[in-house]
Length: 409
Image 1 (cartoon, rainbow, N blue to C red):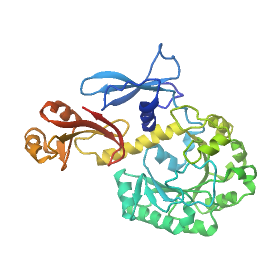
Image 2 (spheres, helix red, strand yellow):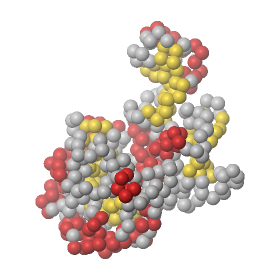
Image 3 (cartoon, helix red, strand yellow):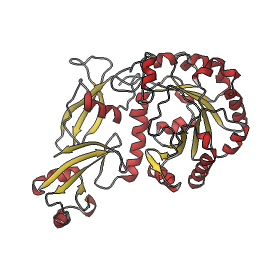
């Protein structure tokens, strides 16, 4: 597939957007696909660059095109020197713990959604948390090897942060790697409270401070954190002037650059500055990768693209969750989604059909609910003519997550 392409393409956000609005390829022959990437030579597609995903329908052994998109850029920087937290993110093994939507800054490029901005609601991955025990449940559902603490500004609720970190360390052991994002320069007192609970700190100095980064409290905090045993780095979005952070590298263990992304809350500011989307399939801003090129020549620097977060990081996390939570009749796709069939009897009551199922299906091949029956998609297709009522195939995120597609049979 070439050295300039990620071998993992199947981005859930990309595929859902393509199905809605792509003018390139709209054919989707199967609602329950197994995906694999391939290069498409010759006409009607160019020889170099575009990648095509084919769909294999396991029921009929037929093939069809799903969509074509440009290859994802290879990561810039030395991937051998990734932060420990990033290594786990690559594996999809990091739970994201959102602890607050409050922040003392108002960065114009902040992508935080309006639903989360300013709120005190805690989220473990996508799930709202009412009690701390739910954090452990979500971590266990994905066999999490670590947690990323984010916000908002986590240090505005330091007691909450330390409480959650202590809970995670006590439950999973000291090897559960925890990293924390902050737009503050932690004081010695704050670092003392985090010591032994947070392993890695990712500083976010505001854009206006980059020109004088060595004169800021961020460097003082970085030096002190290193002395206290933390892994310490800077993580910032790709903006013009990234090279101004080069003098900070001797005081850091790593520096991460996130591709600048368009979001609902920063869209006006993006337009005001004349920024445009790089393409219609991603949220990445055109030109962002170029701003990072000089800084990415240094060994401690790593580039994290918008496409990578979709097609690898999220995908691998979903696969871990699916492997732990899928029912025997759920099919796990290569994207980490699950696929199953749903039957809704004409009578509106599933009791009448229960005997039919028990006679023909294995006990673990279906689940009965008051108004519907869920089963393997291929069983539903096989017996469709014997089952009067609504029949469709569901593809969704695992563990009761959002529905990606609902296809009538």
